[in-house]
Image 1 (cartoon, helix red, strand yellow):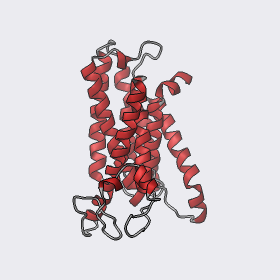
Image 2: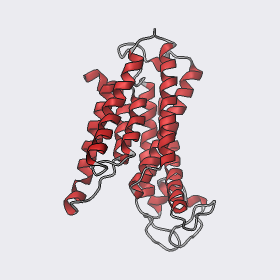
Image 3: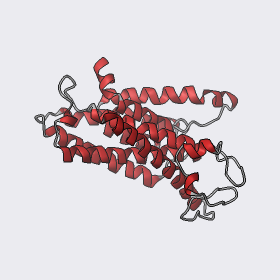
Image 4: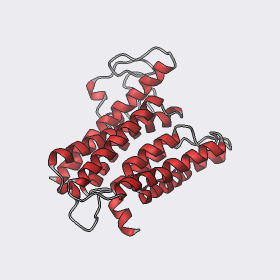
Length: 279
């Protein structure tokens, strides 16, 4: 049953990854006042209208070797990475939920197995919805080096919603604790606060004005200062490792932290129980 659940999560994630990448390109065309895409997906080079079998996540890209079926122009890696990334993210988020990420105590039966099923499903769905918003932000930032204001606002709203439902879930099985209040606040201070300070000190040269808002949204959902600290470390480490060659070739090359923050969030959320157990 669990294997089927994670397979379903992978398929759903890959499908949403394809959809989000398409929507990111549509939004960019709309913002730059270029001719918008129609309702159906098309090749951006020759405007060939893609068939259903051209839109199968991962498989179509691999079968076509990353090229348009008609004009053979390169599609690029963005679509494939979006599908693969969300395909991996969804099972990890599901795993993190099943193992009760940030829902103490760690030495007892996972709280996700104790809280009422309707509330558990609602919490899982809104957490996945939050992940989708993060996925869109990561794709858009990776493609165009920007974080759309509307998507950032939605990420903050959905993060607060996740926190409220998570704490309601905790209160159904454990007594009230002030940790429910101060731990999310410390988490925000660690992740969102650090990026805000970097933005203010560097006047936007080190990190963008949207990075600290994205970090704040992620910190709210993680809800634990230690997890926020690990996410901060991972995001910067991954960014340095991946972007080091580019910075060597071009000294003023700007690193867009959005995708790396999202990658770090997925890893920390998925394996939060492990991280907390070794601290």
